[in-house]
Image (cartoon, rainbow, N blue to C red; front, side, top):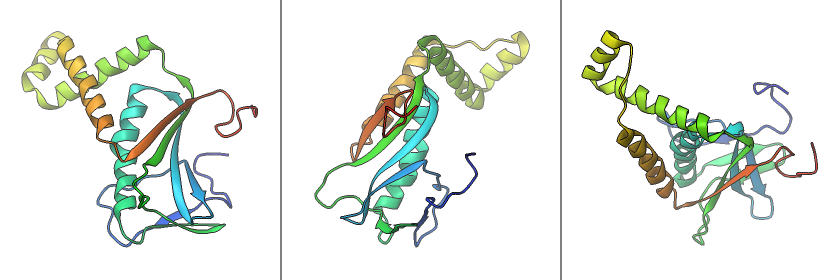
Length: 178
């Protein structure tokens, strides 16, 4: 089915406040029906890459954290309703990333260089002028290392979440299904 088609199993998360730019679509939501609570949220990608990890950490987890902290957030779905909140016992909420493949290291490194280039050209006027004159953007390897440190730092701030990454050519829940 296409990403934009709806099914009977789709649900809607209802909140009482403005999301302030933190709205997000979640590919899968796991509900513990005994507790009546959402226990996991999953993002699904064809290939896991630095960009997919950063996007998930910066956007999806930000929106999810906002929902979990808000009083009264619920998931409405065909099977009923489920609360959206952190477990009061202090256990971490599971955020998962499922992919069928991991990006090759060479492509991942190229992607990081591209991200650093974009950031540099967004704020450094002299880099833009140099690029216009020469057709080249000069990158300091330290900038790429800095970008990796930002990724690491962002992932470390997610201590209220249990992060799980699954890479499999099979079904995310039943690996024997192709």
